[in-house]
Length: 184
Image 1 (cartoon, rainbow, N blue to C red):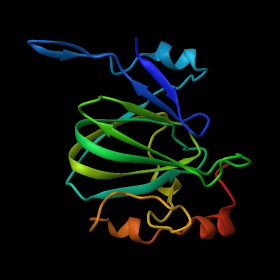
Image 2 (image 1 turned 120 degrees about the vertical axis):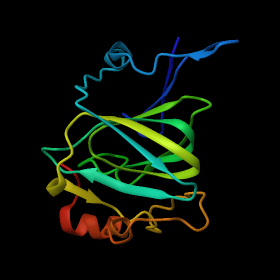
Image 3 (image 1 turned 135 degrees about the horizontal axis):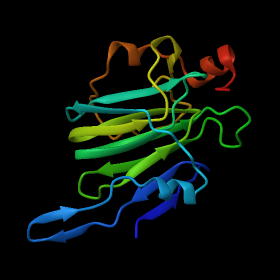
Image 4 (image 1 turned 180 degrees about the vertical axis):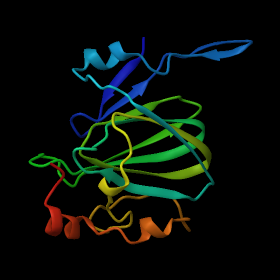
């Protein structure tokens, strides 16, 4: 049986699949819609994405504004990452708080992140990262929060990160709050 673990932020779930191993290798179910229905989640996954990243890379923290907001189901196919979700939901009791989960190809664990969160990850080993999205990417709806915002207090576990130019200039959480308040 696959285990669904609730995290410190309601709605964010870690999925730990049951892995069947034998001399040939292994098998596991990486997705079943009924797992989510049992948790009261009914997503229509419309887009799959995959990225390859070198150790020391940090990607994020990204989000999509409504009506293009995205729930995500993320996992690592190869390597290890530290996955981060920051709650930006309007009226949430955990607004501005984060969940940090190590995802690895060895554990084959996944993280479900509802709409209304900024998402990012740091690469602890060269990795292939895959994720399902509940909505299509829309460039004009993209936003972000500065990954190194001291108010977030996230330990990315990377000493000298490789960051995209875009990810270096996102606003801090306070700047985001001052401009937009929250994700609606």
